[in-house]
Amino acid sequence: MICSERGKIMKKIYLIGFMGSGKSAIGRRLSFLLKIPYYDMDQEIMKKMGMSIPEIFERYGEPFFRQQEHEFLKTFRDEWCIVSTGGGVAVNPSNSKLMRQTGLVLFLDATFADIWKRIHRDLNRPIVQSSTREELESLYTTRKRIYKSAAHILIRTEGRTLRQITEYAAFQVNRLKSNDY
Ligand code: S3P
Image (tube, rainbow, N blue to C red; front, top):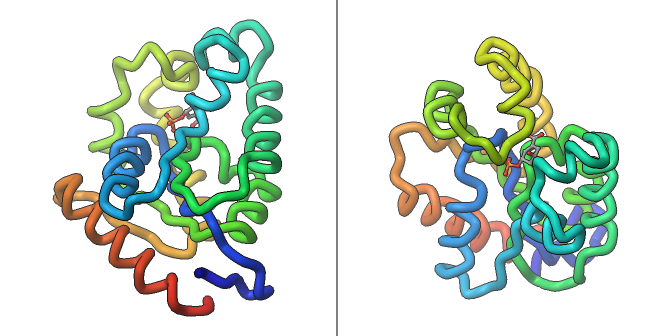
């Protein structure tokens, strides 16, 4: 059992970080390794809305999508599980506060060069579609500071395999499980 500063029971493991930092890939592997359920926040929102992320952005706009992310965090089942978040989730301070109060927050810190390689052709990410490389890099720099301060643990991914990153994340979870922090 993990306890927060306020003695609350911590049940979730949140993965935060920029688009393309590997949150979903690591979340799935960590779930397998630790044998606890895994949820992808974007997938859950898509399921609830019955449409893709680009469709939600197009039809209802970004502020509505951000509201859905916040609702998800507030209402999602109270169980020991892994949640990979969308890259914009931690930007809202009340989301970060909620995550820190209800779980362990792991920041996957990837370089912009790696991220760009993975996301620049992705049609499913509206923010990538509507931004230049320079704009994305500047968003990356701004958000990196936010991810750092929202997270309990920072995990550098550069030069590491998915397996190494997953094992390191599992080590941190197991280490903190028995500690107050
Ligand atoms: C977003 C990241 C996406 C998705 C949406 C907005 C963002 O999730 O939630 O396209 O603002 O960074 P991933 O980080 O899983 O790509």
